[in-house]
Structures are given as structure tokens and as C-alpha cells.
Amino acid sequence: MTVHNPEKALSRKQRLQERQRRQLLAVDVVDKAEGKVRKAESELAVAVAEAVRVFGDEPSACEGLDMPAETIRRFLALARDAGVEPLDTTDGPATP
Image (cartoon, rainbow, N blue to C red; front, side, top):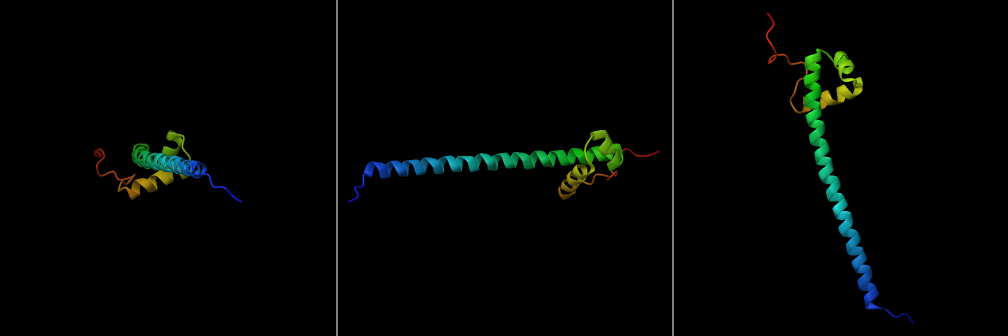
């Protein structure tokens, strides 16, 4: 014969609720961090696009930034997605 102890059932329920609370908190923290990473990547992409503009081309920017070409291209793609063209010189200084 099995005896059910309501305190143990409640304890299991409380443990489950606490575990779910911690899981939800972890998901919330990860979601917020992902948002910060996306924002930082976007800002870095714009900065890399500006650097390519300043250095004149991708190879020079790779050397000047000490950044692999694949990484430069990834950030340039992100910048283009955000509407920033890395080699757009229309707003740059006028040539004499």
C-alpha cells in the first residue's frame, strides 16, 4: 500500500516552480544579451564600413584593422543590410 504525503507533492511542485523560474530567468538574460550583441555588431559593422572608406579598399582595411578578410566582408554585408555602403564617397571630401 502506497501512502501519499501531501507535503512531498507540494515540495516537488515547489521545486518544479523554482526550476521553471530559474529557466525563465536564464532565457530572459540570454535574450537581453543577444539584443546587446546584435546592437554591438551593427555598430561595429558601420565602423568597419567607415574604416574601409578611410583605408580606401578592403585589403588595406584588413591590414590596417588587423582583421581577416572574411570578417571584414561579414561586417560589410551587415552594414549594407543596414543601408551603409562602404565605398560610397558621395559624402566624402571633394577631389580638386
